[in-house]
Length: 228
Image 1 (cartoon, one colour):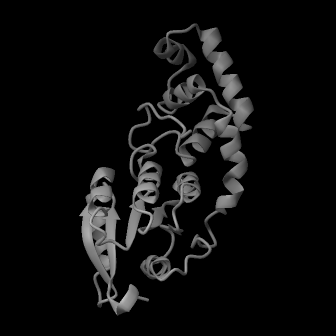
Image 2: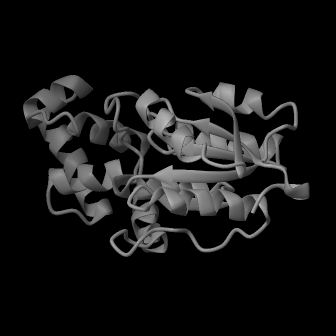
Image 3: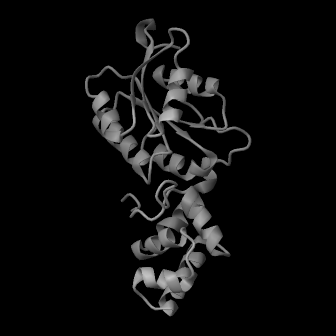
């Protein structure tokens, strides 16, 4: 379960939350199976750490703001294809995990799982044994999110902007003011969003968008664009 030749699996941990990063590194410390060669907070640092060819696996947390987790997976797969990628996500981040897998990640581990599940996933991808995502019985299937993703991609950039503002909970009047439009136009946008997402309320629409990563959990008002 180690890298080729029995050497420890060399791991980069990417998580912008220091406490989470420290906890991940602690999980990988016991014994000689893993060697955490870098603990980083920014995607650029993770990519840089992989440039010398001394990394086997990158563990990427989907808690990164916006779509940064997906983008770093894309960069690693494009620039460093020998590096295997394991994504780690909370249940509400399953949409991001699904998109990260579509971007080329080798394995997904839910934060509902034990530390041993993460260790096993890292060892498996390092040994070329990547398989079914480790999601746990309580976590919904990633495949079940496909329909939501298709609905989400039907939204226009303007409707995504409206969703981001809706997440802050303003009234229709305040939403219209933020957009620089009339209340009637704001209501038209909202109705279109609810119809496209199959949602029955603003809260339901925002919940779907947040789960799928269009609304970041750190800064809900920051501009976010769906990847092309």
